Amino acid sequence: MPRHISLLFPGQGSQSLGMLSSFNNDDKNLISTISNEVLSFDLVDLVENGPEEMLNLTSYTQPAILACSYLYYKNFLSSTGLKPDLLAGHSLGEYSALVASNSIDFKEALKLVHNRGLFMEKCDSGSMYAILNLDLNTIDTICTDISSKLNQSVSSANINSHNQVVIAGNHEATQAVAEECKTRGAKRAIQLKVSVASHCDLMKKASMLLSKELEEINFRIPSTPILHNINASESNSDIINLLTNQLTHPVQWLKTMEKVKLHNGIVIECGPGKVLTGLAKTNGIDNILNMSSKTFKEDFDNIYEQ
Image 1 (cartoon, rainbow, N blue to C red):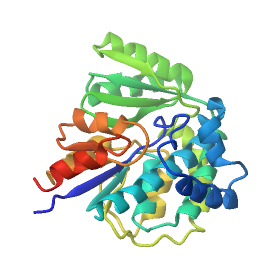
Image 2 (cartoon, helix red, strand yellow):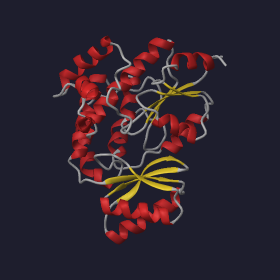
Image 3 (spheres, helix red, strand yellow):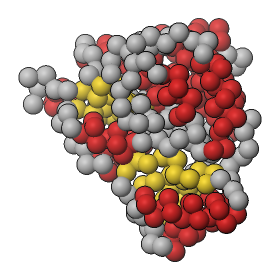
């Protein structure tokens, strides 16, 4: 009996120079043709040749990861001949999921995420730290205390697993929370290499600007169910509000993984890097595959009919 298939689309942090190298010239030419219509820079040239500092700026990172994930999704369809049963994307990856579900056209999404990145870059700068092996309640309590003490913003931003929570906010406040978390028993507090602090109050301005942009888009009902970041639930009628609020609310990835796990199926990271593969394993998911692996098709065939 065919297995249930969930596709996971990665977000920022999964980008790397040369991440389009496994695709053929036809695929890369497709990206160039489409992106040149809506972007003011050569997307394929940036991904292949850098500079890396530019690729890591969120307004460039977002369309680059979306484009790479889009090609991986096309390859999934052509190599397997199958349609996924469920989609989910981490932060930016939610837009890749919307493209895969035919809710928005790729070209329209490419322009949208570039503008999303530009809006985010206009916000006050901040920091993000990954807190390892400390429970969410303790982290939230520390964030509340530090935020009140310093009169600054800091809060949970990515609830990735029971053992990993990312915090975001003002530089001083996030550093203070990271230090206090280590004092209270966290194994590590790792500062992330990001150009903006996502999914926190610092993104309010970007959220308002994005809302106006989203209102101009006619989202279609997803052809494949999507678990959305803000509530780990499916929704067909409130996509604009979900995407608007996503910027200022935490990514509920732990809850998303719990729902994916219920299907006891095959889980595939559909995009560059292996960040979501690692998080899926941390959340106790078996049969997790990665499309950036050279042995993906062989691995998929080996477990699909089991």
